Structures are given as C-alpha cells and as structure tokens.
Amino acid sequence: MNRRKGINIPSHFVLLFLAVICIGILFFSYASGSFAGPVSVIADYVFMPLQKGMSAVGDKIYDSAKEGESKKELIAENELLKAQVAELQSRLTNVQLQESELERLRELYKLDQSYSEYETTGAYVVGQGASNWFNTFTIDKGSADGIKKDMNVIAGSGLVGIIVDVGSHYSVVRSLINDNTNVSAMVISSGDNCIVSGNLERMNESNMIDFTGLEDSGDIVEEGDAIVTSNISNKYLKGILIGYISKIQDDSNDLTKSGAITPVVDFKHLKEVLVILGKKENGEVEGRTKE
Amino acid sequence: MKRFQYLFLKAFLVLLLIFAGFILQTSIFRGLKLAGIVPNIMVIITSSLGFMRGPKTGAMTGFFCGLCIDTYSCILFGSSTFILMLLGYLNGVFNRLFFGESIRLPLFMVAITDVLYGSLVYLTLFFSRHRNNVTYYLMNVSLPEMVYTIVVFVFLYFFIYRFNILLDTIDKRSARRIAR
Image (cartoon, rainbow over all chains, first blue to last red; front, side, top):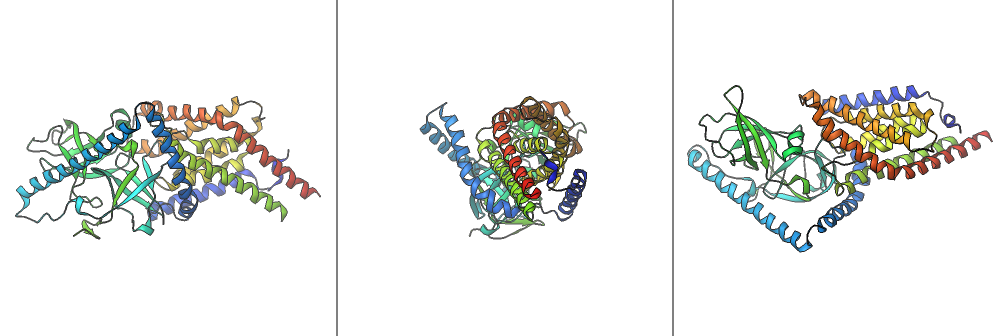
C-alpha cells in the first residue's frame, strides 16, 4: 500500500515544524507562567464530562477490589471514623496552634483567623495527572465556580496542595507530595520555620516527605511534633496542618536540622477535597472569610 | 479537495483514539494502580501509530498525546509534548520493519519507547534538580511502568492493529478517488 500518497511533505520537515512549535510553546509557557491555554477548552468540553463518569467507574473498581478484603459496612464505618479522627486532629492542631501563639504573641499582634475560618468549596477529584513522575490531579470545579490559581486545597485535616492551573470547569492541583513542591512551614512547638518539599523517592518508600533547614536553636523539636504552613509563605495560608515529624536529624553544618514528615492526608485515596476561597497574595490574605 | 476530506477523517479518528486513551489513563486506571504505578497509554498510542504508519503520523500523534499530558501536569507546559513528539518520530523511522503479523516487534518497540520516555523525563525534570539516584528511579518508576505498559499493550494491540487497518482502508479509498 502506498502510504505516502496523502501529502508529499518530507517527514523531516514535519519533525522540524513540530519541534519549532514545541520550543515555541516551551518558551511561551516559561515566560508567561500559564500552562494550558487553548488546550484547556478541549479539557473543559471533552475530557471533563467523560472523566467524571469514568472516574466513578475507576472508583468502583477500586472499591470492589477493596470489598474482597472486607465488608462494605466496615469500609463505610472506617471512612466515618477516619473523618472523625481527621476532624478532631484538625481541631487539636488548631487549639495547639492558637495556644502557643496566644502565649507568645498575644501582645504583639492579634491572631484573627486560622484556616477553619476560611470559606471553602468542596470539589471531587476526577482525574489524576498522566504521569508516574509527578503527582497532580484535576478537580471538577474551575473559574466558573470562583476558583483561581494559587488557591490552597485541603482535605479533612490537612494541606493537600495548591491550584496551579484553572479552566472554566476544571482545575489542576499540584499536591504536597509532588516532587517539585516546596512549602514554607513552621513547627508548632518551637515556632521555627523550615521548608517542606515533596520527594518521589521518599514517598514511594515510606509515605513521607522531606523537611529541611529547621533552625531549632532551643533544641526542643522532637518526633511527633506537628508542622503547619508558616505565616511567611507567600502562597500558602498560615496554620494549615501539613503533618507530623517522623524523623529528625542534625545537618552536617550543625546549624540546621532536617528529616521526614508523615503527611496527615491520605494522598492515595483522595476523592473529595476542599478549596479555600481566600487567597494569599504577597503575604496579604485577600478574599472572603466567614464571619 | 476530496483528498483533504480523507485526511481530516483520518486526523479525526486518531484524535478520538488519543482522547479515549487519555481519559482511560487518567480516570479508569486510577482504580487499577499497581504499587502506585499507572500504565502509560499515551506512549502505547504514540509508539504503535508511529511504528505502524511512519514518522509523520508518529510525530503528530506524539505531539497531541504530549499536549494532553501537559494539560494536566504542573511542570513546564510543552515538555512532554516535545519528548513524545520526538519518540513518535523515532518509532516512525522503524516503520519499514513492521509487517503486522507478529506482536513481538511492536512489544519491543513500546517497551523501548516507554523506558526512553521515562529516562528523558528523569533527565530533564529530575536530574536537573539534583535527584541523583539514577538506579532508584530506573528500578522503581521506569521499569515497573514499562512492565505494566507492556501488559496493557498486549490487550490493546489487537484493537490498535484493527484501527491501523481502518486507516489503511481510508488511504486506499482516497488513492482510488485521486486516480480516477
């Protein structure tokens, strides 16, 4: 059969042409920082409606696999208990945070809000990123529902990630455990800052993420301490629980400490998340908060 | 003019295949994860279409598959597009070896393409950020993905083979029209 009869452009011209387009796209997205652009229209009208249905099937498959191990009621009850634990945990951290802050900072400034006071909107996880290298997922709400880039995403008791890309009916969330995520965080017990960063290798091996650059001059931070997002972060709202320290060690410079955190969110079985509608820009919290 | 209609028909069919594969990969396979690994359907489509239909189709298929992946990812938009486009073209170069009877050669091509895809992603997006543990990423991300992808490919091969025959029929019809 003669395949070449269609068009007579030599294949290396096609390659060259597409390569130029690719490099153009790369430069454009690097310069503008925006991702999808025109492709998001396809994502809005082709991928989203289909994915919503298909994801339900995917979840069914997962659930039925789970059912083989135990009864459905047990799962439901477990889920309920987990939700309860998560809620209580988040309450506990809130109280802890407020206590320690109150003690030291009441005179200096007024702690007016923690994340439980922000207005949120619930969204379903409908698709995951198409790569085993990066941990992103899509949710079924977009700019039409008031979601903007850089909004924080939480689930139950803790931080899930941040919105990196918004279409009109979907948005892409980069999760906390994604390999190139970095979050400025704070240890509640001592108030010292550190950087929390996702790490594919550590996540695969032990379900943990890294933290680095913790000063801890008083030497009071120990395993089990809660880590929350810090107030100096310019994208993350302050006081959102990230996880608990599981491993801590001195760095070779003897000044800082680093280690691993077990995140509070179960990233493998995320089905619903909450998007915080208040957004932090240049350190200022803008947007609506509950009264 | 007729020739372009056939061309559009083919492009439309290939796009449908890509969309279907992408939705499959991002939604249904969520529930079929093995050890946190999802098979790479985009690589299967790029590689097999490139391999069956030549470098031009391969490059273009890879381009659109990559665009889909990039839409839902958080890294630099266009990186997967570039990588998959190149891989599609490379697969197309081996078009001459393809006769369709045996699954062994396509299997081999898909496996190689998947490992190459993994390695290129690693080199451009991980190694550049000082994630230096090459063997770890090879053994725990790239190779499991390849194995799983091959297993899925065995099931999909028949379907893609039929799809290719469909495209061939359209080609033949279009050639007849032009000759007339």
